[in-house]
Every structure is written in structure tokens, then in C-alpha cells.
Image (cartoon, each protein chain N blue to C red):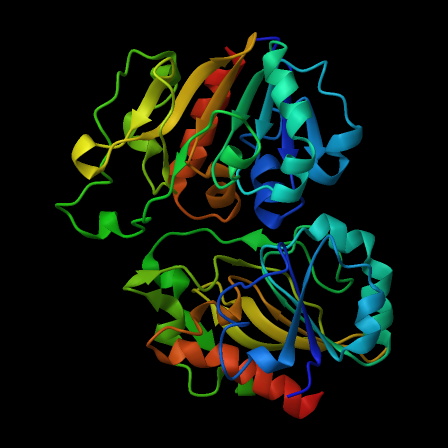
Length: 201
Length: 203
């Protein structure tokens, strides 16, 4: 598979198994945040941003991200937005926790990335809730909300188009591929993501 | 109120941002030093420099002499967890361990700490219980070090938090990572620990 995805990480190495998994590794080129100039984006269709990255540095390179999106390309961001490197997304709002039900996930829209994934497998790992998401990055008005969290129906997974035609998929929590080696249906999010990106790039 | 001047070194991640801007902590730091700017920032005016947990190692290694010299010249250097401190401060002996993320799921289990000397000033502002979520390895410090939190000998021993003299100053090292967990809104004890260690550092 052609490496059409540039995956920015804090260390340039493996995170959560995406680069070690047989179904995904051949599509993904990793780069460390401090090696990233922005120019590299010209060679890729998808920019994958994981949760641990230095967002302040990403903000400094924002014009490269904007240009990438204006060319109709795709950004996938997993994490809590602290610095405004995506124009249309608000800063992370942490949720108020009152019971385990606040971690319950409600799918609103079928999406290929979550195909075959049971909400309870997203909600629990080893019986513990809260790994998937613990708050949300407020989405733009035109976002298609895929999954919500808790009784507040916080939008935690969504996809939107930027005004000049770029595509953005946001997951407000740990990397979707964190679960890729789990023995539950949650493992499919990582492989589904790469498959969906390949089919729709 | 102490007049100690405290600098915090952070790496621009979401967990650094949300922990240092948490209303409990936002006024605690006299200066925030973004790790890529550390090389061009003087540490001379600070009494305490805190290296937030899970900083980017590149900048800590590039500035190792600056950080060591700060402590050797009389400052207090506090290095929080997951910073591979043994790679950039001489004399730090790190011992990796398996991390038990799940001990609290078993009502009969415990994190495996030794009962500490709670008369140590560190415990003036916090409860021992608040130091418990999970640790990432232990240290085997010199005999001169004061071991503030230790692992039980039957679990292999080692220090989870210790302090020792370093030149004219002091080194404080821990394998706990309170910024990550506070900024991730996960593990409430991490925020209590951070409040406690800041109160101690400001004394």
C-alpha cells in the first residue's frame, strides 16, 4: 500500500500500534513533531494527528494545515484541542462526571470507521470506563455528529467539511488506534480508519 | 505566602496546557517555559524549576548542563515522571518496573508503597493516600537521599519520590506523572498530589 498518510507524533515513533499492525503500517509514514517543517504535507493525502503531540508547535505551522485542507485533503485529529490549530473546532471542554453513565456512548450516525464496533467496547476497557473520551471539542455547525457521550450528549466523534473543501474527522479522546490490539470489537476502529481513508481519499 | 519564584517547563501538549491552566494551579507559576525555548531562557531568577512530567526528551537532553547547573548553583530542580531523567542528570539511577494500572480494581490489593514518614514536610499539605494512582518505575538513589515515597521491599523496593542535595541546591525526583493525569481529567488524586507538591516546593 502506498504511504498516503503522514502521522505526526511527539517522538516520530510508534504510538498505539498503528505502525506495528499488519493492516495499517504500510499506509502510514510517521514524523516527529520537531522534524516536521510543514512542507512534507505536499506528499500526502491525509494528516493524522495523535493525542500526545505538541499542539503549540502545530499552531505555529497552522498555515500549512490550512493550505492542505484547502487542497481538499483530510485531517484526522484525535485528542483534546488545547491550541486552535483547527479553525472550526472549539477548545476542549471537560465533562462533569456524576456516574458511570456519563461515559456511555450513543451512536447517532453510521460511519465506516465505527462499523462493527459495539459502544460498550468503546466505553469499557478491562471493565473500566473512561478511556474513550472524557469531554469534547465543540464542533462546527455543519459537523455530522457520529457518536455522543453521556446524558449531556456531548459530541465526541464528528466529521465536517471546511469552507474551502477540506475534510476533518475529529475524535475527542485517546487515539482511535489505541485499541487496535484489544480483543474486543473496539480494535476495528484503527483498521477501519485506514481502510476508510484509503477508499475515500 | 512564600516569595519563591517557580518556573515550569512544559512541551505544548494538551495535558500540560490543561493542567497548568487549571484554576487550582494557574497562579502557581511565575513563568511557563515552553521546552523549545528553554535554551534561550535564563533560569537564574528562579528558586525552583519544575520539569512537568512527560516533557519532550530532546529539549531536556539539549539543556542538561543548564538544568544541572541550576541545581548545582543553589536552585531546587524538581523532575516529575516519565522524563528519562537518568539520561540527563548525573547520579540518577532509574529502575524500570511493570506498571500496575489496575491494582485498585481488587479490593484486597494495594499499590505497594511502604508506610512513609509522614512527619516529612512534603506531607504537611497532602495525605499519603493522595499519592496513589500508579507509578512508572522506581529510583535507586544514593544513601544521602531522603526517600519520601518508597516501594515495599517485598515488591522490590526503590524510591517513587526522593530528594537529595545536588551541589549547592537540591534535586527532587519522582516517577509519578501528575500533569498528564490532571490535564487528562483522569485520576483525581493526581491533582491533589500536584497541589501538595507545589505547596511543599513553595515553602
